[in-house]
Amino acid sequence: MPTVHGGDWPEVSLWLDPLGSDSAGRSPEELARLAVALEESGFTQLWLSDPPAADPDDGSLGDPIPWEPFVVAGALATASRRLGLGVVPGADRRPAVLAKLATTLDVLTEGRAAVAVRLEAERADGWDRALEAAQVCRAVLEDDRPSF
Image (cartoon, rainbow, N blue to C red; front, side):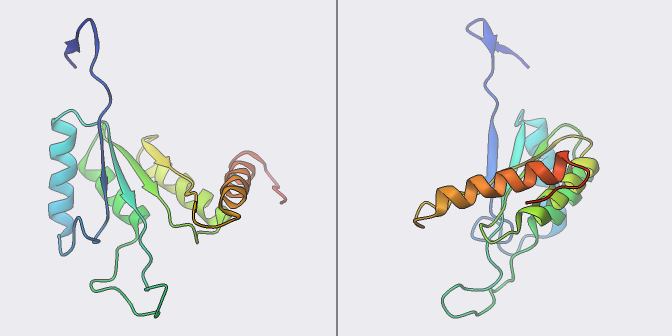
């Protein structure tokens, strides 16, 4: 990477809503080409969001139904070699399942995975829920027999 004013370029990431408003109707091949283009352009990470499959107000399914971002990230790992792949999961993800998904993605990407814990700022208990989710994920990832 070239240097700027005696230092390194800052890391640059892109956030993408899988089959949401940013990528509705895109094929897996198009998403793979995007990952390769980002990597070749010097981007360091591609972040995928986790939109709900059903509308929280009326329960109707999206059109198209949003893809599972952990599966998309795993597929994109095969198209890229250096690009970090991150997921911003929905707040409704169970933390233990999130830890399992994150571990699987980390193996598939050979250590290039990143996962965020979503803070629901609009909820009175949003901060507490985010902290608890982080604690559960850490326990599942670090302990042989986690209890929470």
